[in-house]
Image 1 (cartoon, one colour):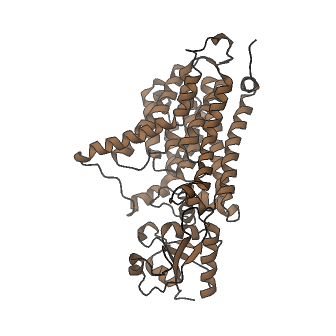
Image 2 (tube, rainbow, N blue to C red):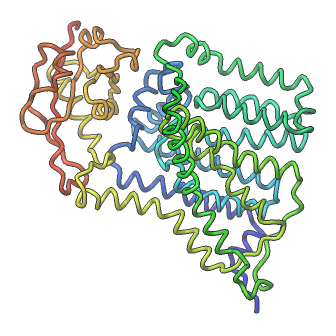
Image 3 (cartoon, rainbow, N blue to C red):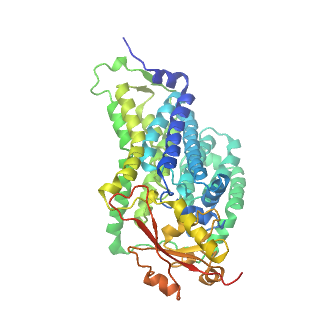
Length: 502
């Protein structure tokens, strides 16, 4: 007797419901997890908020849109990180829902669900869960851009031009990789007869006008900025090392796809003696142009992003792994065929659930157990609220004024900017990165200088003492992490620069 699970029947009868269930489950997981475990924002999120608080048209970190939205979400939640975590998950939900709509137009609703499920296993390892920033915001914009690109080229829907132009302009305001991504879209359009026919009209000119209007302020700032340095071409002697670096980045992308490879391999019918009993997920025949579209955007962003990152010695794939691997799941489904037999259903469900949930268990283990096994510090265990409250209150008690700026150790200073008063961040070692404040202005308005203290001595580091002569240090303040483990208590040396004007 043939057994078909309830999940298979739901995929056949209610594909959209299945998509919403799995996508909202992952979003809820990564919304609840940081609220329970994180005492400080992960990675560079505090810096993102510090930059967003200034509402600059552009900074050395790139276009401004992600920073503005992060600050708006933070303020809307009453200066609480919950707003930013929620914004991150809204971006994730929008990405996967848009991917489902795109996949549905290519392979039908039932197999589109499989594409989303496979992509979730990739995103769990390749894309950040809660670290909102340009790479997170770019993912739903790129998904929308791909969907409307297919509507323009593959379905000849001219009414998609306006949405396409808006998304392209917002992408330019989000990530520096937007120009390269748009060039990939243009290359595919020029390489296909239907794409060239689409471009032979006035609609692209109007779309270009909308894009320029949206991105013009940032483009003007970029042309005038002195702090933004374009990457230099490597010397001949460096090419081999750069090639190895690019290959390593590409290998990391392939490793992130291991969940998809494992699921496809386990579903293979080569060793299945009862292949005729496996339930089948049908789809209509795929348009050859749609097949080329899916394969191109599943391969080109990953290869181009790894090549450029290796050539210019960048830290990560250009555009981020989330964009580079966004079409991987759909490409695997397209390559499978019109009939997808789901074999070993219980095993596939277990492997998929493990792949999606495994990163959450890694975060839990690192937060609770890593401090006992290693001396490495877990950044999210720092008591951000206590640190920000202490230095904000101390400055106000000493000067009868609210804290307006903070400098010194970049990580600690960015955490203090989360204070309810939202002081400015000033990077005294690289002041060109924080153009909204200068050393002279900082000394005039006053602020707090912080550094890490290894002992109870309050002597500031030599570089800070040179930039702030006459600095009178206070007794280092001690804070406890979420889990101290084998690490010593967190000691923060600090000093107050009193304001010169009332």
